[in-house]
Structure formats: structure tokens, C-alpha cells
Length: 409
Image (cartoon, rainbow, N blue to C red):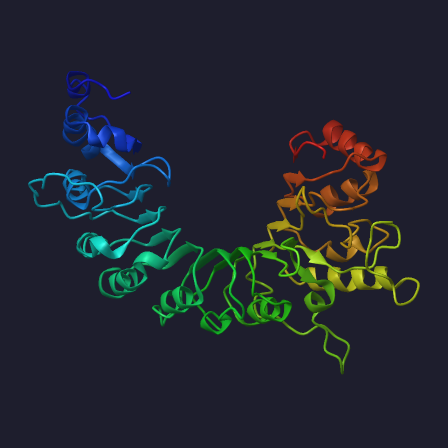
């Protein structure tokens, strides 16, 4: 529902945090006038379109709409395709105000270069943008790369989905000083170019979501050589069956074969957030386990070495190990005191623990130990529908109701 112009005028200082404009509103002239005259100038975040698969909008009309944005607009989102497929009258173009506060730009729909003039017009107005999200890079890759290089000197956080290898290399190569945050989703090309991010002093957060082509060795190299990494998220996909993947425990341990000690990772003191499935641990206590021990006690030995690696992240605040509802994790850490949980007692900054869809053995003694050693702990996700876990939940509810727990699965 669009308010009557007279109503909007009675509130001269009205500010709109997030204005979402369906394309149907934009295509209706009477509503469009109210939108441009009274709503768009008041929006901090302007979103054009609601769904990726909705109707498109002409570049002329889009420019006309954007020319009404306040100079202090902070975020722009395009959820509709900018296209010349529909004939529309040319709109008189008023000079757009400089967007001096624009910090984030989101391109969340398929776009094409048949309106390259529009994209060049847009990039020139993005001089203050710091964050960019692009869901479909391929159609505008060349224009985007040129626009970032020429007009977005402050851009240091990027998220892009469904990129090709060429997209990825072209965009990541743009910042010789390094990116601060990089998130890549839904990519399926082999041999990911991790060399473009290794040894980056600028990189603080790196996330891979539903990505093929990242090997266990790649993950270790990134964790070992990025000195200021504060967050690392990895949700890989197995090339064999498409299941959600993580890292094999033996790779994660990263032991020096000569000395037997763990190799140092340069991010050990900087890392605050770690989200990754640690897999491949023999669990003879779980009948569904597909990994067999080489000798009795081998699984517990591997778990202790994994705990020793985790213990080095002394400033870790968020630790998410969980699997997924479709692919629960069986060959994982038990998270029991018997398996070596006490080896990570030094994670004094830990606030959030997620063990969802894992075959853990967390009982009352384990949660007592956690609240004793992790005094800042305020969230535990993923306790299971077993007697041992239920006892742990009851104890936490009685003695620490302030700790948030997800529903048992």
C-alpha cells in the first residue's frame, strides 16, 4: 500500500529505513509520482523489485527513480533486471544528487550488458561504496570490473554468487592491497584460485558457501598464512554426491611429520569466528560411522589432536561445527570430557557453540565444565534428543537460564 501524498506531506521529517518498491508500483504512473516525490527521498535503503524472477524495468525509468534519492542514501538494492525489453518513454533526467553516504550496493538479479550505459552511469555514483553483493556476475562482469577499478576506491567487502573462475579471478585481482571481507557462494569450478588471497594482511573474514573446488590443503594454507584473519566460514560440497562437506581431521591437525608437533598457523591469535565441519574421525561408538580405526583408541587419539589444534585459537568467540539436517555428521568430535574436551579449556572468549546435527555426547558433566571454563558462553545450539543431552539441557535451564539453547533436534 502506498500512502496518499497528502499524508506523507504532513510528516516532513519522516525517514524510511528500508523502502521496497514492487515493479508494479513503478510501472503505474500515479503511484510512481508519489513514490519519487515523497518516498524515495526519505529512504535510507532503497530496494527496486521484490523477486529475482519478477518483471524488469527500463534503464531510463531506473535513472529517473534514482535521481530522487537523498544524497544521504546508505544502501541500494536491485532485485529486478534492468532491461530494454519493454518500450518506455524516455524520462527527463534530472541531475542526480551525489550519494555521499552510500555504503552498500546489492545486485541480486540477472543483469545484462545491453544496458551498459546504465551501469557506467551507476558506477560513477558509487565512489563511497564499501560493500558490494552480486548474485549473478557473468552478464556484467567486464563492466563491473572496470567500474570497481575506476570508481570504487573504498570498496573492501564483496560477496558474489554463482561466479565462473574468470569472474572470481578478475574481481579478486582488483585489490592489490587485499580485500577485507570476501564471501563466495555456489561455485562449481575446479582449482579455486586461493593464491589471490594468501598472505593478505588486509583479509579479516573469508567465507565459502556451497563451493566446490576447495581442497583440504587449500583450507589449511589459508588458515596458516593470513595474519589478520578474524572469521573463517566453510561449507563445501562434495564433488562425488553433492553433500555438504568440511575438512578431514588429519588435514586440520596439520602435524609436522618430523617433530610430531602441530605446525604454527599465523591466524591463531586473530581468529574470532570459525565455522567448519571437521570430518573423518573414526567413531566406533556410532554404528553409522563409515571411518574405521587403524587400531583400538585411534579415534580418540585423533580427537585429542583436533582439540589441541582448536586450543590454539585463544581468542575464538564463535565456534560452529554443526552439520545439516539432510547430512548429519557422524565421524566428528564427541565433545565429551572422555574424548579430550578439557584440552580446549583455554578458549576463555568463547560465546557461541554450535554442534547441530552432530553425533556428540554432551551430558550434564560437559555443560558444567563448559560454564566453568567458558564464562562468556551465552549460546549452545544442537543438543540432541538423547537422555544424556536432555539431562544437560535440564541442568542449564535450572542453573543458567540466560544461556540460549536451540530446540533439540
